[in-house]
Length: 317
Image (cartoon, rainbow, N blue to C red; front, side, top):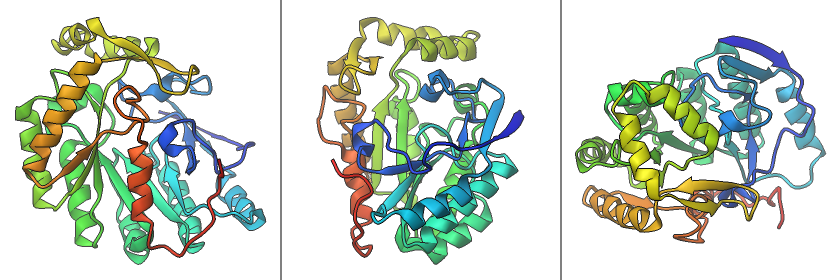
């Protein structure tokens, strides 16, 4: 993995385009991600530096401090990260993410972290100190190491992600789980989900976001490269033969999604199955606008921070 340090010229606190994040400040400590997930939409971005390369914003911490000092409107919480993983297994990324989170928490600004990486001990210590300000989401769709290794080759193993959940629960933080993306015929089977839900139930997981894989040309290309020697590729592509083109961002971003009836029925079945394990599974409108218009990711995240002393939102529609 080639590591490069670059200057951040734009504002640190960015406004993303997904509906559920439209009023949320986000931070991406890097461009590029070492996890190299086959389904990653960020690998198609114009600013993506290329596979095997991660660019780290060396001036981001100081820039964040200055940005916060100048603003009259502070965010209630900040989301890590919309196009990379803040806990990539690269020491320089880990150190930068820790510094950024420490700065935000010291300003009484909550952090919402979505990760498929391992949570280091120093982060757990930080989160325990500020646990009322911390919301963690663990991305996991299967306990099968062989499946995970193929589609998420350099992300942490399923067992490591379960250990993340165990460690978080031990310090009083019950994380949310993200089944995103579900892959039809591979990770949405009852056998796969029952095994996963059974483990999650033991830790008292009660919230889960679910979303199916959508295809763009570069995602399809990356899937082909990653899965061409497996039986998975044919099965996945067969499910998308009746795919529908939908817009995620008005007319600016179109993707090919599974047939709406397939998704609706499958989401209902998954939610029903999850409920038998005491888990509320929800579908967010940001990636399923033809099923629901509710930006439930943002709503659920916002509820987590309701008890934080009220701060004005960073972004006003």
